[in-house]
Length: 316
Image: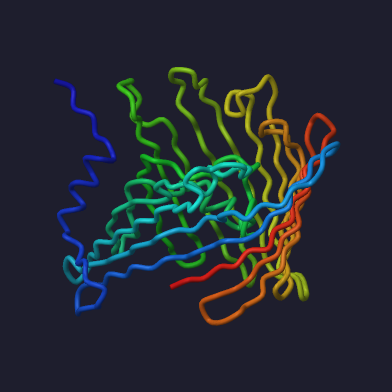
């Protein structure tokens, strides 16, 4: 009988650590439950049509994280993040599924002097190394970039040695094919003075409807005077992009005080070529803020989508 090693198998092994469920920290364990409610107004207008205003959910979520010491060198860790949506009927709400009930992240892991290993639903290494550095707006930061979404069956390793940080991950197969992994990613970040640089690759297996292919990403970020600036460049070959040609994606992010700006130009996602988001965050209290965003999206059919958002975020 052929035995396949899956993320479920490893998660069961890791679960033997028996995380404490109490919200009160003890000498060797800690458990914390929190929530983030995000409700606001959005205005949407498409070229040639009238604009509309909606009251909607913007990623309300419930979170749990815990850790428990195994011995002096090892600690078991776990994290669960569930998306919650009050619009259960999802009537007359554009893109309601982006805030719908679902598992955003769910992983278990072990950390020690060797680094950290996490297994389950989470971001993979390409996102950690490249896209996370420009994913700074509250809504729609990197949705046109490759590998911006969370994956389900991820085994990921992270470690830091001096100025270098390493990350490697595989996406384990869900079907019965012969692949050890559906996807492999490797990323390295290097810190020099106040600047950080990154390089990462993602390689897909050739299986089923997926022709495989490869993706390369570069990143640089740091302060330029009063501005915080981050730049990412992605290039996917034709197989990875699932297109007749290779695809490029360039993103620039800038911050100044409470203001932020994201600009993206690419040719890789559903006819969306370019977008820009300008935002402002206002801190209401220690656990509450308002954010305001204006976003313009250019499409291949020469139409534009315009969005304006005003959202209240409360953490407790």
